[in-house]
Length: 150
Image (cartoon, rainbow, N blue to C red; front, top):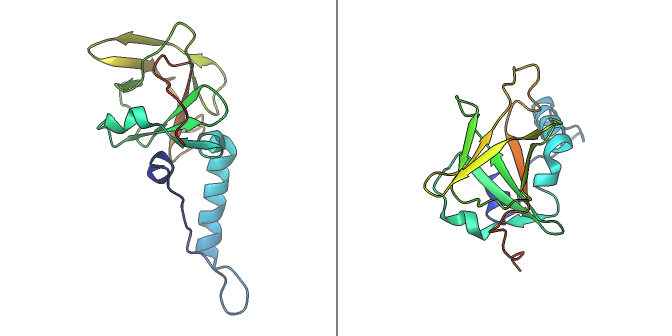
């Protein structure tokens, strides 16, 4: 997540053994990455870093910006205990829509200048979470979306 949010690329040092087989532990990790990307790939592929968020100090949330759409992705590494995601960097517009990738309905949000954007996350159980590792909230049409970095 951090790699994508800071415009880097991830190198997986996974290779086959001398007999051409990939060890099971590496297969397992590759499958887990593939499963996560099937749900959340839109937050990684076709994105770049979002320079507005570089000022935010929360190390449990990383941001990417879509190259071809007015979308910012907030990638959460920790699920908030109170099901409220607080984002200081994001300034919504009247057209802003928040959604949780892998979960159908849009999310409600509110904004205050002093506390930032607060998104109400659904109360999910481990069986209904779209992923056990990290979650992505997409935010469309932010007022401070900015230009796509070159």
